[in-house]
Each structure stands twice: as C-alpha cells, then as structure tokens.
Image (cartoon, rainbow, N blue to C red):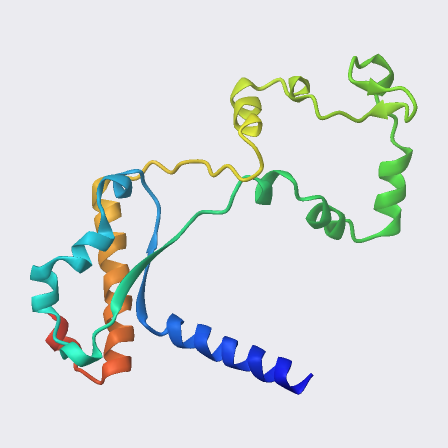
Length: 178
C-alpha cells in the first residue's frame, strides 16, 4: 500500500511538473475570425521570440487556451433552476392544480395522460427547433466585428503579460514591443 501511494505521489508530481512547462494564454473564442488566425503560430514565430524580454532559460512554450460561451443546455434545460424559483408550497400546489390541454395533443403520452416527448416537432418556432436539433452542447455563434475581436485579443494579451510579469519579475514596460 505504501509503495502504491508513493508511486501515485511521484506520478502526480511528474504531471504537475509538466503543467509548468507552458505559459497559458487565455483567449475568448467569440468569432469564427479566430479560426483563420493561428494564434499559437504567432507566439511561436521566430520574430515574436526575439521580442520576448524573458531570458531564454526562463522562457516556456505558450499554449493558447480558448474559453467559450456556455452551451444552450444552460439556458434551455434549467429544471433545477426553475424549481428553486418556486419558493412557496402554495405556488407549487397552484401549478399542480392547473388544468392542461394535454388530452387534445398528438404528442400526449397515454400512460401518463400528459405530454412527454422528445419529438422536437412540438416546437412551433422553426429557428428554435433548428437550434435544439443541434444538441445540448451547441453554442450559438456570436457575430462579432473584427474590432471587438481585436480588442478582446489585446485584453487577453495584457492579462497574459501581467502573469508573465509576476512570474519573471520583469517590468511590464519590457513587454511593450512583445
């Protein structure tokens, strides 16, 4: 048991050591414009490495990590959130006593007497139905102009430089050309 623990400990230490071989550049993926720009290649270019004020022995590879908007499941399938908003037993009992038109629906599930279906044809709005057909992990694309993408990139770059400044104790002004 002790050797297993030690083997696991050394494995964790090794993994943690590998994680520190990179500096992470976080960038919000807010437009398909970023598909056309290979951000990793910008940092890896020899001209960019020459402008890097960090001494060679302290430089790490830069890994670009994209952050994304939440998928549609966060907005559509929010049963728990809805139930938490019902704050009184009176409101819940009123909702349960309310009559429904489930008997007239073609989507009615006979054993339950109510509509229980995964058939998306129940949704009348064509755009909403098409979005839901794409699945719960689908992210609605944000249409962003190039200026917004550029501003977000510069903001991410400034945060990245701040982290490099803290790690290396090199003043922020040294990164001006970088």
